[in-house]
Image (cartoon, rainbow, N blue to C red; front, side, top):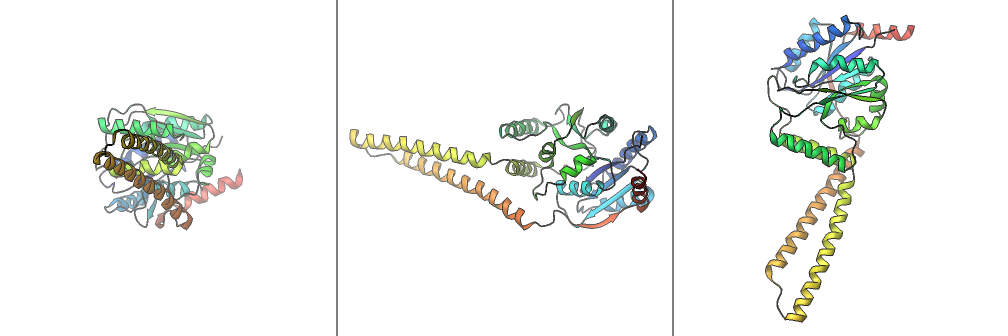
Length: 330
């Protein structure tokens, strides 16, 4: 049986402090998989530099020069984690039988990569890496993350709870994923839409080895909101419900005011008027803002700008030649 060609895709942004250890650990895992005959000896590591401002690209280049299994892609600027990951996936699909994506910070347990490959060999097209617990998170991050998954479930979005972007995709699953052409990427929401046979591998998430998180609170909230508005129109429907509710409340208030006017001859209070104005005004502004968010997404989608631009690629041509020869004789 022909061994599958595996590519491990690693998006990197300002990872100079952790890159060498990341490369070392992933290289060891890849070597073990090759030695144990789980994957082909043409399997590789693909590092995607997402416009880093430090020496990350220089370190990727150094690894490439000393190791034939290392490939590198340098994006022209910082396009964001999801688009950097997509750049690696689109490159890897041309010469890989299966692809594993993992972040460079080593918080995801690299030791379960072997389990990913075993599940793939058992016939699974998608293998999700799922956190066994969130004990390493702060109480705030843990509660907000769980709240986000509950909200997404209420909105009918098929997310895998406690899964980020640590996963394995077979070639056909990856080809199906790349048919989704939206500009605003939320890959953990798109992958379940692909279908195919899937399973989960559980692991304990570690503390970041070095450097700082690339997802502060502001980015996390933006990412979550992007995921909600990219996959559901229920927030728009919620506005409609709020509008009808506000109208109903206003009708009750009108009945109350008329009763006060004709039955008790009292003048309506200033407080009730101001509360009504602020309530309706806030509801309108929120509604306009949410509708504007959807319109803005439509505006960016219809322009069809490239999702990323590659400035430089580091690629060992011998690997490609060897892969193409295998395909010819199959």
